[in-house]
Image 1 (cartoon, rainbow, N blue to C red):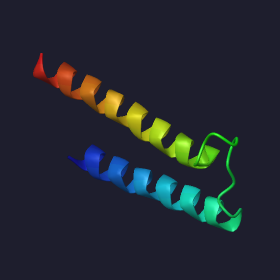
Image 2 (cartoon, helix red, strand yellow):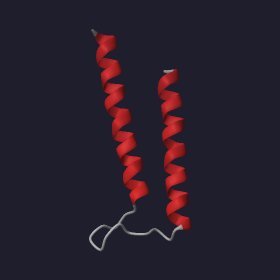
Image 3 (tube, helix red, strand yellow):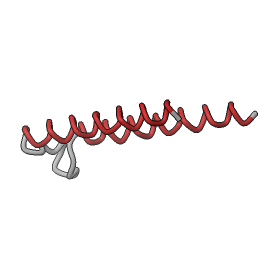
Length: 63
């Protein structure tokens, strides 16, 4: 459970930093077709990677 708490705190730090960066840059778009910035994409990529790692860790503990 400690690992989950640490990961949750770390993910929120990443999200806050990305949002603050976007806010200071006036939320730039990567192209005319996208409505979000690179840093937000990076946040969700990071969260998805953390979820994959969590699933692997839980799977290993079950077996």
